[in-house]
Structure formats: C-alpha cells, structure tokens
Image 1 (cartoon, rainbow, N blue to C red):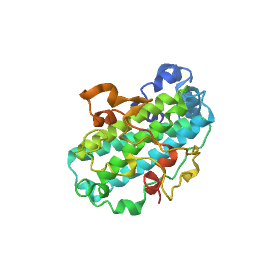
Image 2 (image 1 turned 90 degrees about the horizontal axis):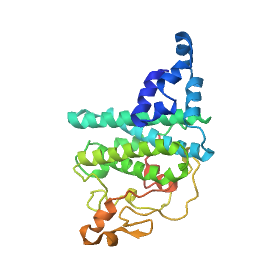
Image 3 (image 1 turned 120 degrees about the horizontal axis):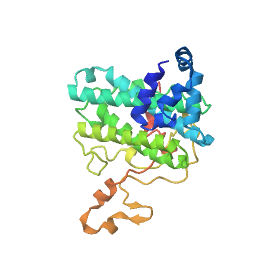
Image 4 (image 1 turned 120 degrees about the vertical axis):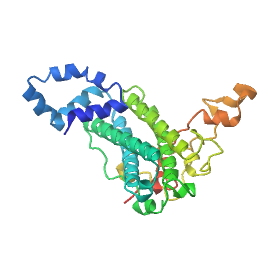
Length: 293
C-alpha cells in the first residue's frame, strides 16, 4: 500500500483532505519514529482509522449513498479501461487520447476515495461492477458514426447520468462532511460531461439540440425490466418520476417567466441539471442496461 500516493490521489478530488487529517505534519508527527511511521503507514488499519476520524459523524445512510456512488464509479472506471484497450482508441487523435486518459485517472481517484471512505466507516466496499463486454463490442468507432454506437457517445450518456445520479442523492448527505466530498466528485463528473460533449462537437451543456436528446438518460421514470436492487445496493423507494432535463421550474419558481424575454426556455432548462433517483439510474434503459459481465 503506497500511503503517500493514495493521499496525493485524494487531494486531486478533495482539496480539503489534508485538513481533515489536521494537516500532514500533525498526522506524521503523531506516529513517532521513522520506523514506526513506515510500519503503520503500510497497514490498512492505519488508513481506515484516518478516514474514520476525517469522515466521522455520518449515519448508516451515508455509507449506503457512498456504496451507490462507488458502484457507478467502478462502472465508469471499467468503461474507460475498455476504451483505452480498444483499437478505436488506438487510432484516436493525441488530444482525444489525452482527454480520455485524464478522465480515466479521475475515475480511478474517485474509486480510491470512495473505497477508503467506506472502509473507514466500517463497511465493505461494493465490487464487481463492470460495463457489459457484449455491449462494448458493438461500439466499433471512437466518435464517428451514430452517436449511440460510438465510444464517446456512450461516454456522454454515462457522464450525464453520473451528474444526475450524484445530484439525486446529495440531499441524503446534508449535515455530514461526506456532502462536500460527494459534491466535489459531482463537479468533476460535470466537467467530464462538458469535455466529452466538446470532443463530440456538442454544446457543453444539456439542450434540446443534442443528437442524443431523446435518449432516456435525459427523461425520467422507470420502464419494464428495471433492476434497481442490483449489487445489493440499498435503493430508496421510487415514488414519482424526477424532473426531465427540459424542466424550467426550480423550487416552484418558473425560471423562464421570471427572467422575461432575455432568456429562452432552452436557456432556463440548460442552467440546471436535474436529478435522477436510484431506481431511474439503474433502470435498464439507462445504466442498468449497460452493467454486467
């Protein structure tokens, strides 16, 4: 276990992580001699104790939310690993490869962060969440051709789903330090979505002119074949469909009417990402249909 590497990776997605440990100097100063520091830093128990201190005070539902987030991050991590190992990626431009490489590094960091936080809170991180190999085999181009059958087209759907998924459960972390971590990851996912859209020649934000605008990722509700309890995740009861992405009303306020003629309905809709409930995210028409061996 490379403790220092883990801390550096965490710092990329949680700028406050060292502050949570009271500062790097305080942590290591409390460990005694150099020999003791080396021995302790190599043990999972030490790392778990640090996270318990850094992210203490959360209820069980916080762990459940993190397990859900980890499942989605593992899913994305495996997708980008498959992309990087594919022949379409090998033939992509240097700029596109660099972007995918950076996104993959972020997903790796998110997985490390969430695993550490879950373990630190005394739970066993979820494992084995992968992108279906048979579906991936059908993605025969990097970004040219029909959007729904290209690697970057699917990447756009995954990133936009991730943004909606994090927003859907952020409210359950209110009052805990974990909310900060979740929203920091959420912002990174949003930047991934914007970058992928830019690489595909799309606008950086969700809008009706998207070539994938009709995909279920941008609507709401659950269709037949949903598997919301996959991977043993604790799934909140599904009640009513979440707002769709062309929604122009926020907290009961009609944004378009309030702004007058200066902004269009598309402007008002594009200003907000809408949340998706867990059952919707894991529906077979969205991520649920892409998860598997």
